[in-house]
Amino acid sequence: MEANVDVSLRICSGEIACVLGPNGAGKTTLIRQVMGILRPTRGSVRVFGLDPVVHQGVVKRRIAYVPQLPVYYPHETVVGISEFFAKLYGVPLGRVKEVLEALDLWGIRDRKGEGLSPGERKLLLLALALIKGGDLYVLDEPTAFMDVLKKRTSWEMLLGERREGKTMIVVSHDVEEVRRICDRIYIMFGGRLVASIASPSELSRGVEVRVYYGRPGDIADFFRRGEVKVSEESLVARYAQLADAVGDLQEFALSPVSREARVFLEYPSTESIVEFLGGGRGR
Image 1 (cartoon, rainbow, N blue to C red):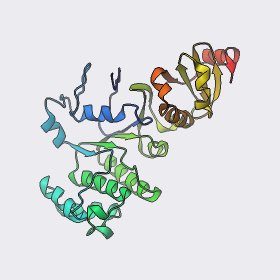
Image 2: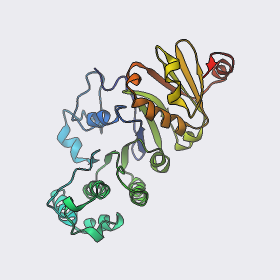
Image 3: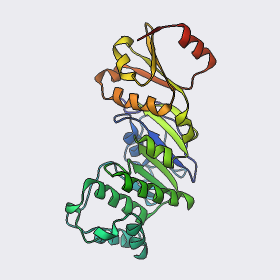
Image 4: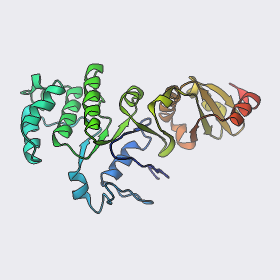
């Protein structure tokens, strides 16, 4: 079984690139390959021009990482673990207060990890990444478990780092987060890259989802946000906004039948509009 298949992308220096997709899309596997934790069975990964598996130590020193799950240090205080990271990476201790204040963690600086909520734990992981710093930030769902205010505070910090010329890979399934901070968007589904979007503004464009499945009529209800046409071999759902398509794909991905389907996401051409209006049958 292959976790990712034919995923090809290029992220330029100084941009925030978001990898968007439902759970199980292959996003975290891609991150592990970028980090040098997993070696791809085909193709190659280059970070700063280096193979991250062969040169893992060199690459990791230049990466600041936020993991997907809100791991924490149960017996360390917020300020204690933050100062430890600063000393470990040779960062002035003044940076600790700067980051903790900016993320609204300074008020709970003496609280131990075991006393933090999941959102606060995730916020602390982001703080540790910002304290370490790096040329590349690899952020796996950086604002998961956070409330709206904490998310907005985090987004402002990340945008500030981008203004300093930092590069970021942000894994997310939060469409609003993608709209707010990303320069370029890659959409994954079922281990494949199904779309590459040059600007968050395109999330408001119309889009088509084409699904090849043995019994396409059986899966029509998963795409209720779109206008659906079903033929003998495929289903086509047309959406006024890409964000709605992503929402339906997230729900479809939770179904076991999604593993048997091939999904393509594309902007409708004149030809496909004619085909959509004239062929197939409505649900």
